[in-house]
Image (cartoon, rainbow, N blue to C red):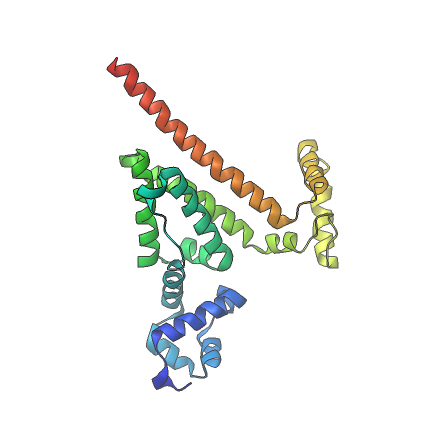
Length: 237
């Protein structure tokens, strides 16, 4: 592909494919140029440096999120949909959470998502600082879980089957080390044994934790609103 036929959109889409396949550390202008059949200098000419390209790639993938209609579905359903959408986005593009947390990755796409989150929790009844915290709390949970799921340790767990049998000697050694440490802590050991008995894969465990966390956060926010309403009612009486 000759340089004159390239445009920023093509480069960003190719960068997303490379990021999905190899992660941030696997992205370079040289590899991107090879993928597009062009020189690395052409990449710099169109998108600037790697950091700017990561911001452009992150902005592009945010457009994949379908934002809920808050008045139509209500605040709680909208909040749940936003949390699941953010998690699914980070699962599809595991590099995204690193861009959000370690690069100046703010963009129009992310701003649009946050605007809908503010609309959601404003509709619930949160105002001022409470509104900021109501928006931040669910998505700190989402990005924290996404970050943990994207680490090398999570990939080792993913390669480990439900019965604890690892697929490589290195993985087996890590599993054995974790088990040996847990034997000193009875509650932790009981938890690990319970998870093994339930026969859940790592992905299934994460799904269950996420579902529990989402509903617990929403319950807590709803309870906070109800308590405030009760306090106002008492004062007015």
